[in-house]
Length: 498
Image 1 (cartoon, rainbow, N blue to C red):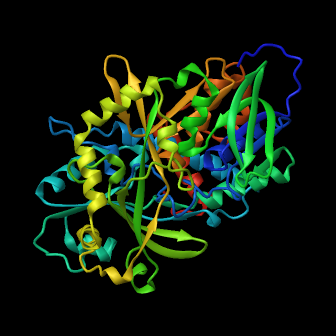
Image 2 (image 1 turned 180 degrees about the vertical axis):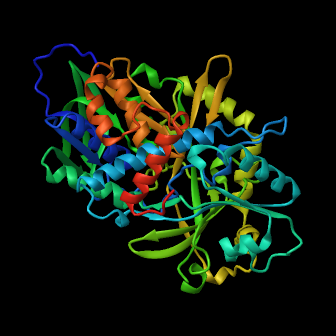
Image 3 (image 1 turned 135 degrees about the horizontal axis):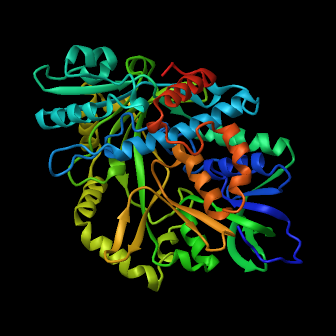
């Protein structure tokens, strides 16, 4: 990153807005490659990881595309495109390697505090869906990153893998499932807090909570960051050579306020989610897996239904969802005015275009909003036919702000995924979007380093390769290295051998 020489004395070399898994990961990487840098993490709430990184605000799947069918769409010609599934798995392996390094080096004493083995299953019913899953399995089974994936159309085998799926189901109904024993369940809230605590203990990173950043103003050689306490009792101001905005949905508004031209044309569409949860030991004991199905016709990719085993604070539970909702807030603890405050002349037309082009999504969301308890129970019973509503409670998950971007020749486009926005001089960057999000925090933050510090990355390579042995290498192109990485990280993290 080339910046003009300046007499300015900065309080920090890097200031990270938002106390979630993204900022925690970036701070960890920066500390490893530049141990002398001073780093600040500024969080608006009084604790870290209470928004999208919180364990009840995300599915905690450890997205490796082992079971998430939205990463392997069926094309009009009937073939199944698995390229995105392979790419997501590649990304997750980078995350696993960094976590394993931190465990081996003693930075995280106990991996079971944030990650557990959990079989990942895809489950479908009906002739058309069975044919699709069979094609998906055929396309992935021989790939080194999907080694060991199993496939069955036998109801008895499905029942053995996940008993709840077949409890009360018509045995004549065509079903199919795949299973990957290398899947995981991840508590990203616990991981975030441990990463930041380790940095704070080394006195290189300052954590400031309870401060809502309101302004980002460019100054010579860097940025002035201003904010206030949520209770209004205190103002906050600091300066930094580099700023990262990892503030979840609020990143859009903050990047707009920074005035960088790269944010022009971007907008956000907030979607809230609800899950049903049970901690009934008799039910939880019969489902030790994460099971994903296919999204309903007209439903967005982030609405893929799943019945997940979760382990939070040592207590197992099951979650089913998501049921889509709507709130104009960009954060779960945000303002009802968030959406309206983000509207600018440069993003209004892309937003309107997306609305016109995605009427089926609008219809789906309206249907979800109007759905009563019985309709939601019926969705759960497609996975667990014997489910009873009284055994479950409703919880509200985190807010997701889907990216709307202006694409030349296409106008406004609704994008499902993440988008890295960086100023041309690399002095500020931010992250927009959602899934796979937390699971791919490491590769996304490596992209931040490459985008914002291009003149330093080569010097940092030895440190990056020490943390991430496959850094710069596609595991898909090196089956032997892929097998080594899967085996070694599984052993270090206390997971079933892959």
